[in-house]
Image (tube, rainbow over all chains, first blue to last red; front, side):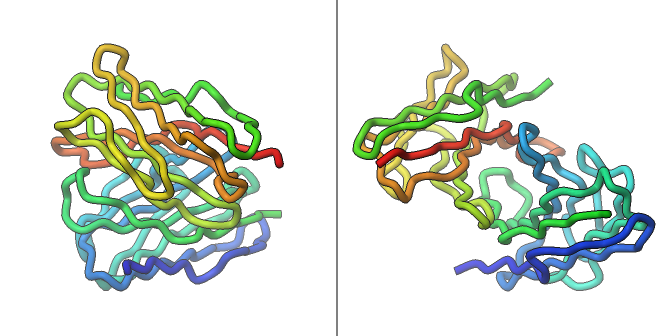
Length: 114
Length: 114
């Protein structure tokens, strides 16, 4: 079974803090994704990565950056957290580039920025 | 622009009743279509997918979906709902070409009455 693990289920941070959300997958997948999930908006893609040290902006990259130094790990960084970044964050991984291939999701990190 | 519409935000059904969740998409080419389910506090799990061929596809947990090109729809069905089916359901379209990403609908929250 593919396992995508997000290091924290819940995080509470203060405005202006630098926040790291970590995601690890154990299936040697090339592609990894970060989504943000908000009620009534579904999932929106923040960033994705095709391979180590490669990244592409998704639909809502503003206020976020990412890091992929190792194939199994994809980090989402909030450089200066703001209250409007309070949300559920989901990480996913996928084998290969084709959208036919299934994306496997982690359990999510619920971030509150106070 | 590509989009996915799930017109029902919230649906309540009685246990044992049949279920149909609606999904309409807008995409110029033949789409790759997916249904995911998110149980409370969990990440997303793939229920089923459609790429080509038989327009009625079977998935896990007794779910099925039918692709109707003329209606740009991919509705999810289950003949008899169980209390454990209470969850949020997301329809998604896979974009091909250079983007290789999924576009998600806004989700339908299913409640099951005893």
